[in-house]
Length: 290
Image (cartoon, rainbow, N blue to C red; front, side, top):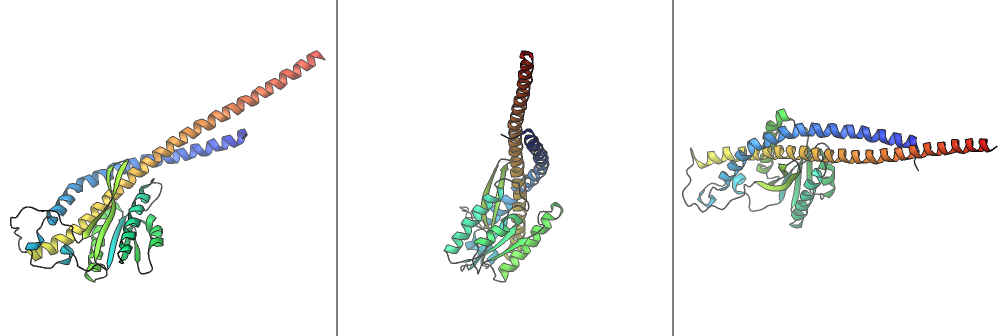
């Protein structure tokens, strides 16, 4: 049975831990509210832009713009993975890694190479262990700074387009979480090069101004940057929601442990007091008999 000093030390440690988890929960809640608003503000615009471009009837286009239509021969696929730079966010990074490993296995099964770009350092070392010798991986650091998030997304989009143009990669997909609520997010994988097509039963002709070449060369790179930017926003909101939920659970666990330790402490203390009283009474009775 633990003595009172050991129990007091445990109670002190749990109380200190509870203060930390409670503070992290409150901070994550504040950050979540801001991240949730930012993700929601641009989500509809991002989805509509992507939908409009994906509805273009490619059979009517007489130009070959590979960023839009893709390539027939796929040798190397790039995965843009959006995860967290920090821990203590529950199963957030695990859910992303599970989808990434599934995609890597599928790409390897097709005898293709993988180039992984990690936005967020927590998955970097884990994914590196799963890659083959011919695969590549790189880490994008300091991406999630709120004051430079859109410019960072544009820089990453420019890099991806440059690698595609140089024939270093042949297809690009984004792996990210889509935020639904503080307790629910879903991991999604989406192709951004080439742009996925959507069924279009409208047989009317699409008119481009000034011309199709200028429209595609402007709209497609911009859409890639916007999709990367939205992926980052969704990832940040999902991360903060997961962290708030995780810290709330940790705080409640600390409360339960404190209750158990306090009960145990009081029982041992009461037992010791009772024993001392028994000894005093027994001694007094012995003296009286003598």
